[in-house]
Image 1 (cartoon, rainbow, N blue to C red):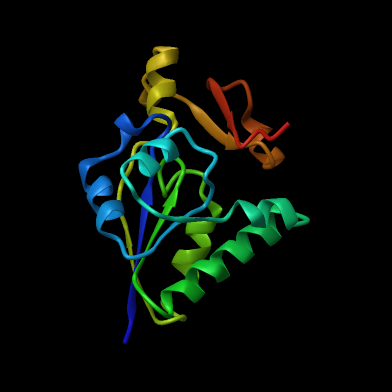
Image 2 (spheres, rainbow, N blue to C red):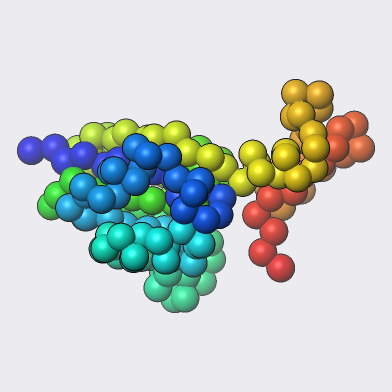
Length: 164
């Protein structure tokens, strides 16, 4: 029997950014796994009685982000071998989420049905705060991708995934 992995985003901040569909999925799930419990929405999940397992221990014991993400992906896929899982990440599953990229690649070969639900990313509130329309020109890069800086200065630049 193939199990279902549904990936949802917790939005960029407080629980008010969650979609109604995401709230329902989290409430109805037999197993919820959070990439991290270090997120403003988590208090609201606890208040609603949503139980979950967080992957923060992988960050504490991993020697690199690559190792951490691989361990999280393996953990999620192992859980999916036993039951349907809702995996929740900060922001949007499709913006700067390496574990989601890896899960997309590995779910089929693991015999897991995968569905990704849309969610608000950190970009939407940033556009509002900065008063910009990204269609008028904006370059968004990952802080570790120094090659992406090659065209720096042509457009406004937003650097994501800055850790220190």
